[in-house]
Image 1 (cartoon, helix red, strand yellow):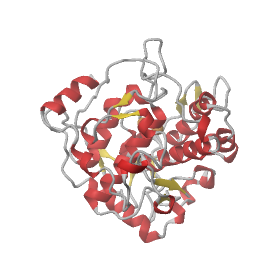
Image 2 (cartoon, helix red, strand yellow):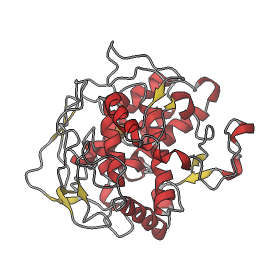
Image 3 (tube, helix red, strand yellow):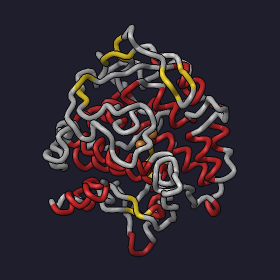
Length: 366
Ligand code: CU
Ligand code: CU
């Protein structure tokens, strides 16, 4: 399937549209002489959302809204649900979902995906800042009070309208209480946003094909449900500390996706962030439709880079296969394995995505 879409895109000459804007981060990089390393003084600084001034936050959300007004690069015939440039990113995520989650590709693929997003905001929508991140433990007990989700003009919008029919949710085998919204988001910068793709089943797919609704067009309101139970249990300081003290990449990946290690606790801080905002972000395939997706994944990328830097020599490694849940049929990942990004970029090796200051990247986190 993935190969099929790649072939379609190559045939249409759409496969590496964003490639030429590879290193436009205000830097003076010389890839030929320094192996793509960036001088430390020029690193772009990705900041915590609350660290930005309200007007810097609005610059970010304006750029996201701008992406929703730019024309898509994916062809309408193959991707009827893709209506704009923002949706190109959502559809690319859907297309590779069965390879890049609960697998060895998870961390490096999302690292590059975020970088492509940040680059597109800057190149295509005139954004002059960098990708902010969501520092989970700062607000884990009261999401609605955070500058991220307080629904002010400088937030990422907030809770959805209260929906009395909102059901409890399954996180692995654990039943989690419902969040406080469940309906359409009616305030903040994304109050008029329309979702176009999904929804997919919330159950982890054991399929090798992209399930229904695929890339169908399904316009509907943007739905959220803030869930402090989930964020306080899965995105707290204790779990972040435990993640950062992981002994090796196997341990790190296990904590990220399957923690606490109880039979009923399987979300980890990665799943916790997704499940703490409701159905849109819970959608394994179409989750980038919630504008908080990129900030949630920036926090994951930040913690991975902090953890890598503690022992850089020994932490240039990834564990797992190129298939979801690492089935025996999956191919073991290596640093020279290629990752695909469809219409967003040329393929990259895992090795190229191992260091935020090499191979064309030049960023760090506060
Ligand atoms: Cu993902
Ligand atoms: Cu995720």
